[in-house]
Length: 279
Image (cartoon, rainbow, N blue to C red; front, side):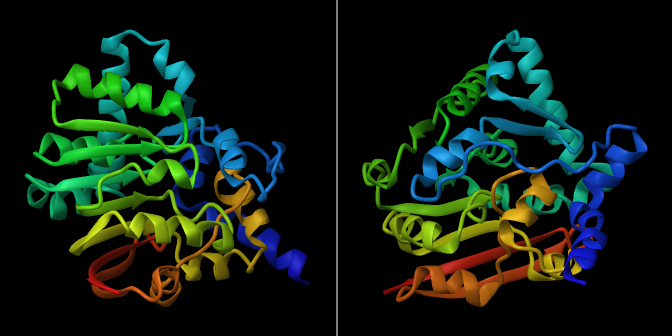
């Protein structure tokens, strides 16, 4: 019975991206994740997968491929990515929180953990945020460096996240830490030390912004194991839902107030805006 429910849920858990791929004839049959997975070596495991970034809902490229592009081609890819994910029918995907937060980022010291293609963080940097891009993959950071240079952005920094020790070199007075889909793709026992370390770098009164997957989406998928759900959602080794109590538990004993929580994009994602109130 559970297997049947999981199969019925696979398409539901894919959301709009799957529908678009099907419409365009780009949908692929389900394939299990076939790269090495060792949660005793979490960052090596994650680094193997996240050498690729979503350009649009139907296009994913490795950052090695992006680095091979000319500057005008790379900028065109980035601009296409932002337009596709933030305008028109997809305004409810990322456009709404760009409109809500971009202007308030001016002058703020912001860390983007797991920056990927930087659609959100580069946009905020264009609005005056003093941005630090943090990523597990060096080629991802090199792509971001090139895009920022092409756009003439000056107040930007880039930090290679090799392991938890490497995070300790970051400043401890960030106004905002943002995680746009990057802190739910490993087991909680792996992620909690990372949350705790990142918290050391957020000032009291600072904001924590996070995009994740809601529990309701997991339930619609038939409550699969998180390794199976990762394969269903992003062909990744692990994806895990978060709600407010679960996210707050990752920071304990630190205290946060919830400014905003919402599920959006037809229930595909959820959003957390928290204020750090100290230990």
